[in-house]
Image (cartoon, rainbow, N blue to C red; front, side, top):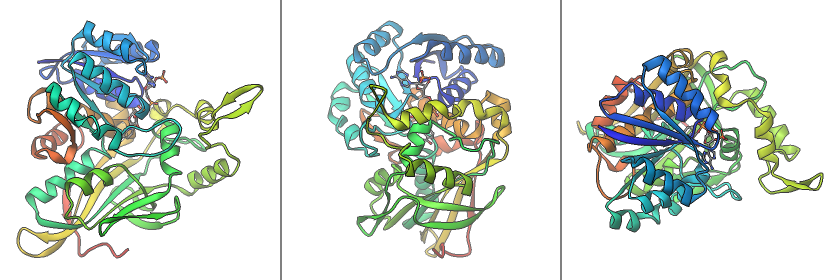
Length: 402
Ligand code: NDP
């Protein structure tokens, strides 16, 4: 029985709060704060209608550390679940330290002016959280998040040693729009246009953004083109599971998405440096976000499934080389029917609820800053099965041929 404060009233925040309300034995009191209070109120109304649970809402600029600290002192939650944007991570961590509250998020800190997804800014809080006797759990979404738990589950139950790991993120959903992103457009486009990096034999290998393409036949979706990308869990996985010689991350994109993105990039609309427009500085990517559909608005029209998982090759516990594929399939329309949000928000919001449950129930505990793969995967995996994201493990005939 614990109080939780969720910050961020986007698609992910909405799913997490709905799922928390469905688990009142763990989340005895839920508060939701975000920049625009009316968005919190709309989520609260949906939660009340779907579950009967009343949550309280607040307007908050989470970049204002003093204001966040004051709200924490007022509400006195056990845990803050940060589902705002990566830019707010450090400010919210500071407020948690000031108010003595545990912290959790789903995406690592990013400075506004450089698209760099790196953990070092948040890992630098290690001593402060340890000294304060507080836990900070980083990256409890799907990827990062479940993908790390999948990896530790395979390691714990199936492998003596993992040699290679490929993370495959497929969204087979169709939202009927010419171009839209399934989560925050600014963060999504910054991620997709960044140089691709993977980990191989103790070093980062860089390739130009979206330049390495493979086709893969995803169960429940079919064959899709997927592109090699950098993703933040590569950094934490190679740190905490140094035995893995190669770690790569792949994400699927349709041809229409790539064509639109190429044009937007070519004309400068994805730039994150300020440009002057009618005497005022604007950031082209932020302007682009303002004209693109809100991810939360895609829920009613999105059809199809997501399929996200990990393929690991290594030495099995039976002494044989093997390749295992562990994955979840999530249906956009089912996700929408349950929480009013499409599957990309759902597959992030459910693990956010589960990560919060791990901390609040003490199944995962300890002072300091933690990544997902540092904890026992089993209780998290059980909750995935019980709360809408069932997974399966399949043995493949051999390692990936690419
Ligand atoms: P949205 O853009 O839909 O929602 C973000 C919310 O945060 C909005 O309600 C926004 O308010 C609020 N917000 C932004 N800045 C502030 C601020 N300074 N103070 C208070 N609130 C603020 O994003 P999503 O819901 O799609 O994503 C949420 C998070 O989840 C992101 O960090 C994203 O990177 C992460 N994510 C992680 C994934 C994973 O698998 N690990 C996958 C997908 C997303 P307003 O509406 O007023 O702008």
